[in-house]
Image (cartoon, rainbow, N blue to C red):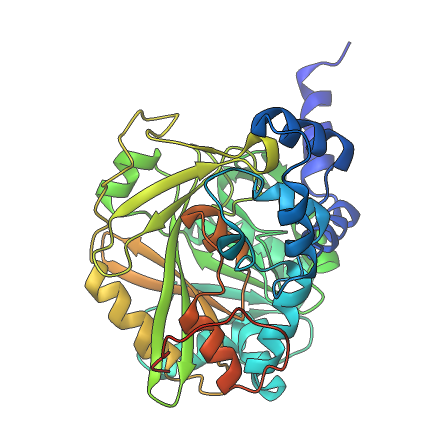
Length: 397
């Protein structure tokens, strides 16, 4: 039998497992995986038409988006709501990487991959970002925030009650891997949602091992009241897909990442989180989904709060759009950008940018492929030489 103290140790070990975190990041870098045999049986059963869906399957695998077999089933593209033209507009991870590299200058990658550099740049441009309380970085570089270069220094910082509440994340992090919130636990402990009370020594050691490029420690942000009421209090961010061209940045698509109550972060891969498609002009939620593959389904109400999600108007929408476009304009070397912006009681706050960014969020939420006529024309303008859907529509980028 486990006593509570033993259970706490087990929880801490699982939560602060460096190798597990690294493996999770590598897994998320890859196309989704699933048992293909099971997926075929589900597709055959749900379509009720034997293997008639196979022609569309092969078109997707060999089409512009180069979907893997698993990605075809991940989006449930065998469903009758999709015709062949709609299916070939979905983009897989492999083709996505080539498309993004064609549109982005590698000399600008550091701005998106180094969160400390990015925050410094945004601060210089006068764009609201989270308050950085400290940076844990053994390299000795200097910044506007309090610098900590040792485990002992990190422990001293975490033992100070005035440091809380805070949110920690690796400077080179992705997918919220290694990110966690903390409040003061007293007596050499910090309270970490999902792990309980953890010694500051264990936390500092974990950050030193996982954060090879350092860790950011930022003041915890709260969601705007309407979103706190609807989503149960966890912070939700809007993901903007921006196409940056000669005419300046333009928002191509927008979704909101909807967390379940108590979720560490709003990333869709985390259990129970949802995605909301947004009308990019109005900021209203038009569709919400959860799951993927056989479990992909539409959601009308938040499972924790029972709040209606469809038609929900996001606050400060026009200010968020304007902030996104202004920020995107500071990064001319990144032709395709993905921005995460939090909607807080004090207004929109820029969280981070990705060069390119995962298109699957938009494809899942909106139920349509990312290769719109506008995006296809954008790719051509940036020299992308791969296959694209035929289109007669001008892009304006």
